[in-house]
Structures are given as C-alpha cells and as structure tokens.
Image 1 (cartoon, helix red, strand yellow):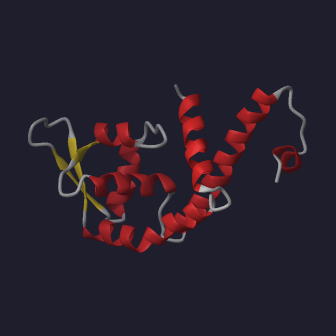
Image 2 (cartoon, one colour):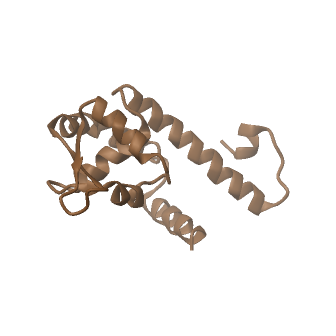
Length: 148
C-alpha cells in the first residue's frame, strides 16, 4: 500500500515522502520483530545482543564491543545485560586484563533460546518476500547510499 494511503497525508516533495517512508517502514518492521521475540520472553534489543554474543563463539565481548556492533545505538547496554543475566542467558565477569571492564559471554541457555528463535529470522525475511532478489539488492544499495 502506498504511504499516502497508509497515513492519509500529503508530502512537500519526494525527499519528504522518502524520509517518512523509510521511517514508517522501519517502525512496521520493528513492530513485527518485537511481536516475534516477545513470545520468547525477550525484547528485540536483547535478541540483538544475544546474536552478537553468539557471533563471538567461545570468546567473550566487552560492553564496548557490544555497543559498537548493535543495530540500535543504545547507551544503556549495561542495564540490558543485567536483564539478560537475570534471565540466565549470559555470563558476565570481571575482565582479566582491565578490572574496570566486564567480559560478557552467551551461555548454553542463551544459545538454546537463539536456536529456538531461528524461525524468527525466516518469518522476518518473509516480510520482504514481495521484493525480487534484485530489488532487495537495490534496496540495500540505496539504503547504504543514504548513510554515506
């Protein structure tokens, strides 16, 4: 559906429409993601952190490393890690090299949860199934170009 039909609005120009369209689509995809992960008892941000930690394999990550790799710039990573600790999905201990830093690692429960959630990725990919592979490539190219 066209954006103007979705939000019943007019736009100053195509740049205005494109900006709002990207923002509206971001919210649309984010809401779908939030619903999917909520059924597993975590938030999209917690899911993102767990995926980052799974990508570290057996290595630990510092809070700074996690912040750098997050999709959303979230300054409250420590609080999110506290919640993942309470849910017993990660381990956190003092760094051996710098006592001010904490080393974080996903545990077996976190890995198990992510394995159960792998179907979420397929469900989210399905949201873009009405685009051809070439259109998805072009969309990625254009979105990258916006951030240049």
